[in-house]
Length: 165
Image (cartoon, rainbow, N blue to C red):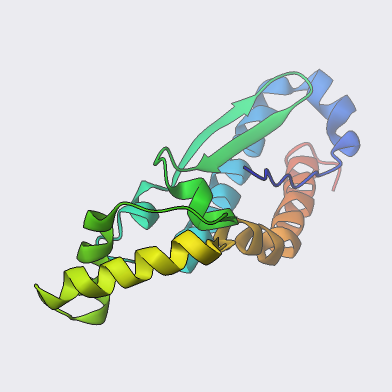
């Protein structure tokens, strides 16, 4: 799956981090948690709801993980179909049962007609594949300016706490 990284240059913090690592890590952790929550929310809002909304509900943040020279969070889903929804698929024959649920929930078509419609959708997927939703990509791209702004604010906050800003 495509991984998006927002690389924030924090060299300005290197000296301060060496002198007061606990305070820098505390402020960095707060900023990471806030920006990650915002990006996660944006991703969840962009994902298709389908029959159950399980995919959007499965999006989670791991971290923050902070070390001497790195700070990161990971945002993703453990559901097996997250990557195909994000990136799309090549032609393949999907299982019919989840499509029946989708046809009923999204299109409002009940059995027995729902099974017929689901089979037609499956046949189309078997010939054309599916298009990607790109919720992760789009949410990351749309969030970069705000994330960078939050990290610039982080530097100002740390300098202010140290009486250097």
